Length: 344
Image (cartoon, rainbow, N blue to C red):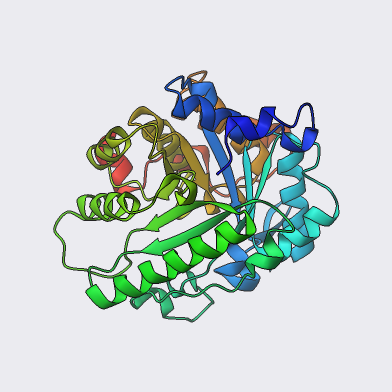
């Protein structure tokens, strides 16, 4: 596991001066400030959506009706890393191979990370029905190859409330941890809400208990650096975040794009209720101007602006830079996520 000692013992090497290491150490030491909130740009969607992962192509008038290319996708990642407002850039193994060959992260404070498994519940090609079925474990990337590119990755798991399915998933996770240790790879753990009805009345409680039960059997060398999970409302988040604040650091995934107000409201709410990390994919990548969006996310977390003000500032920036907005300011100020509406 990466620790503060891993950073300081190597002297002034720019390869190790990563904001992720420094912020995790402050969080673990109960020294957290809003400036220590961690933001990850999740650009691993090609392992889920395939060709459409880069998002819609845009010109000065808006969306063209075509999809961006892989080259465009990589350019957007490069721009985000150069901006330095994110702490983690999460990609597929193939994207990281390209970026690592360019030495993009060598002197950057941004930590490179790779998605290390792709269980069937993230398979989302057009016309597919995988996501509506119970998940099965699968890992396409080779850890032997990935560890040559970076030393941190994402592993995901979904609990199904089915003994045999969950046993299979947990056995795969145990095997992964053993192999990751062999190659010196640290990981963070993504826990999805099940996409199908698993027969529990309180989904947040079920997921929280499943997470804590799983981590209880894992000693520190093999534990995840932090979690990435769905926002199931203030009560569920506060319960999980307060259970073991220095040992179970909670991060929140972004989910579908929603409105820009949804994005800013989500990051504000989860920080307020105990999350210390936002790991957003579509909310960032499908926005009209990802780098400006992330810069404003940082301002919202640090209390410089509120979510509504941030939406207004975002649209002002779009107008100033001649970027066509996907929807009107009025529509983009709306909260559309039911969980966010209940908690606002």
